[in-house]
Amino acid sequence: MTEALLQVKNLKKYFPIKKGILQQTVGHVKAVDNVSFTVNKGETIGIVGESGCGKSTTGKTILRLLEPTDGEIIYKNENLASLSASKLKEYRKEMQIVFQDPFSSLNPRYRIGRILERPMEIHNLYTKKERKQKVAEILQKCGMDPSAVNKFPHEFSGGQRQRIGIARALTLNPNLLILDEPVSALDVSIQSQIINLLEDLQDEMDLTYLFISHDLSVVRHISDRILVMYLGQMFEMSETMALFKEPLHPYTRALLSAIPVHNPTEKRERIVLKGDLPSPSNPPGGCVFHTRCPSAMDICKQVKPDWKQAKDGHFVACHLY
Image 1 (tube, helix red, strand yellow):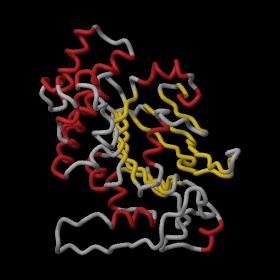
Image 2 (cartoon, helix red, strand yellow; image 1 turned 90 degrees about the horizontal axis):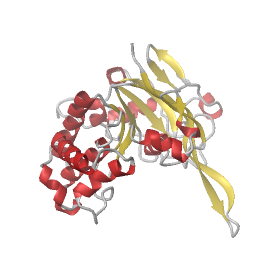
Image 3 (tube, one colour; image 1 turned 180 degrees about the vertical axis):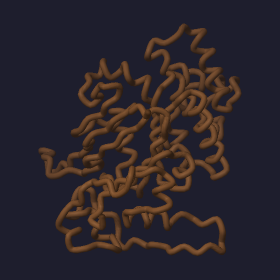
């Protein structure tokens, strides 16, 4: 029986648009609009979509690095969205994030040992000697030499810096890791090393991942289920193999058709979406995808589609179903 570790219910994150001398609010950018899903213990949920679809904002809002506008974030039967800062701190060590840029996420003034010990100091964990031992153990688990503690971030390659970023997230023994495009800034050969490392760590430390990426090839390799987002909204969610075998939403089909084919003799129909991504501050009425959808109908322009289960475990928001 699967155990739900995290439940996101009707999550919204709107950024106000202010104008004039008095900075009055004249509208909102709907970065995340009514997103709901469950993450089970030990699984990996992939969140994919074009740049600007709200996937990174979703991850940061779950951790309350960005304050949610509305909705619930249920972790261990506690709604994190309504907790005070002091109460939230108790849960911080159980939910950590690995950022996209492995250089700007590390303080260039601190040596690696100081960077990795700092989270344990903040949460008053272990003695000074135990912290140093913990840092050495975590570095080894992440494929780094413990002597790295005496060096600065600029002395490492991008792949090594990302390993350090992962190590920092693991120093607090978290249950949930939010991975915000952790390999997008790395070379392809290094990407595979980091993905393999994440899979090994997941098995060894019983971790649960929320993996955010625009690279469907990477998400396919690591994810158990995939959530497809567009303009802050959920479009489709399914088990990974089912999504790749039979995508239901026209947007998902277009994304999958853009994945490079390894075999040059293999033929695949390329679905090219017309037009640009609409502004999240002024989204189209009805289905927000209808301005670019090759299968758009009249109802798509007027009525927002409901989130429904089209097949067993396969959910979609589209009037075609």
